[in-house]
Length: 101
Image 1: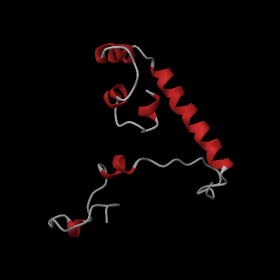
Image 2: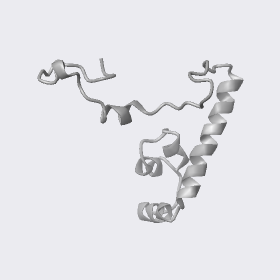
Image 3: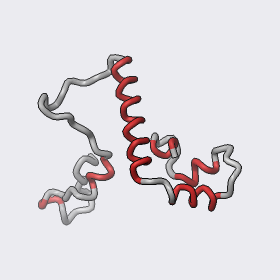
Image 4: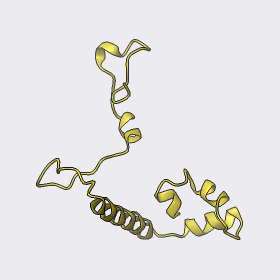
């Protein structure tokens, strides 16, 4: 699950195939079915905290975008489904999608 959370592997099945887990694929999925949401949330939170420490150690931090708020970036693939083309470009195949040009 850690490899999937960190995007080392694209999905659970890929992580399973590249692991030394001595269990059937079905057993792995059955185990994951019983993982509580809180466990998954904490795993993501932990990885984020550790990553933040590494970025700070490397002195690779960026200036704050909004001083009063903690900002986060969304994966670009999430946004493109909600964005729309400019009205003038909607009827052409050559019209670039937002954030894709």
